[in-house]
Length: 305
Image 1 (tube, rainbow, N blue to C red):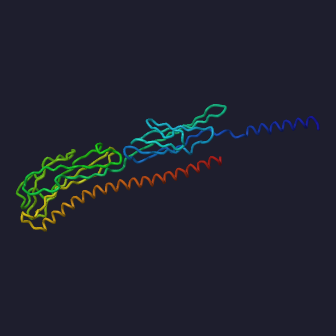
Image 2: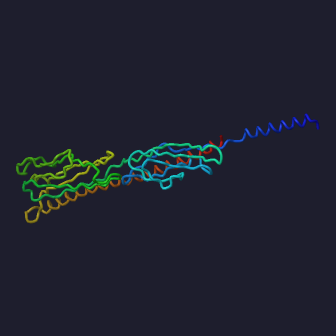
Image 3: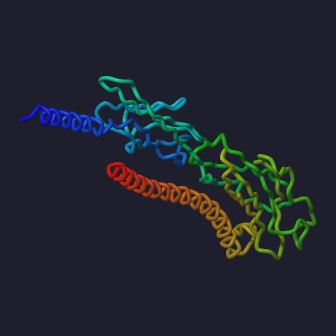
């Protein structure tokens, strides 16, 4: 074999080896991938949130670190850490770092916003004392209203209570009610007024009088619920007063109806709260499934490149 042929083969082998070296794929750079926002509903002043960094670069030589101001993660180096977040917005940073055996340390970061919101109105009941006024002697009687509040995020002492109005089902000076006026006194609408006075009277030809105090309770996020406290002046108590037993029965039914309405308001608010939590849980599952599918497609696209 001639020396020129050997030289040509040697040069060709060198070129092929060099091409092979140039064509070798570069090591994957670290990439931090997170969803831009995570929204959760508040419960007891906070929300338990599990973050998802599984779309980032993972594997040997790569490390993850989650950080957020004032937040303690169960495992800040996990791809799916869990932590309790307060009401409001909290920025979170995921850092993905590659520490190769040789060469520089490379880091990529991504930031997301955890939003804990309160969109559920408080459950409220309003209970007057007394709930029934008797006898109808035209005297002013003090009424005290107890407000009971259950809110998804705020404690009971962190909600705003406002008296909207106190109304009577009969006019002040109606037929057969003693010719008195100003039957509601001391009520201050627009304030947290839970004590006022109403007159123990009702119209003679009527079926009894109902005083209704309407309250609005607003939590710290602006969600509001109205509740009513009803005090009844029955037409007749019956018994020794010589009244008709039918009137006594009707008075009892009116009082029971007032109590039932107050209880129904409270139960409806509680049911709305439970339904809202169930809806949020379902939406969370749907969002998680959509996120996993997006990550699967992202990984498939990266492999195709």
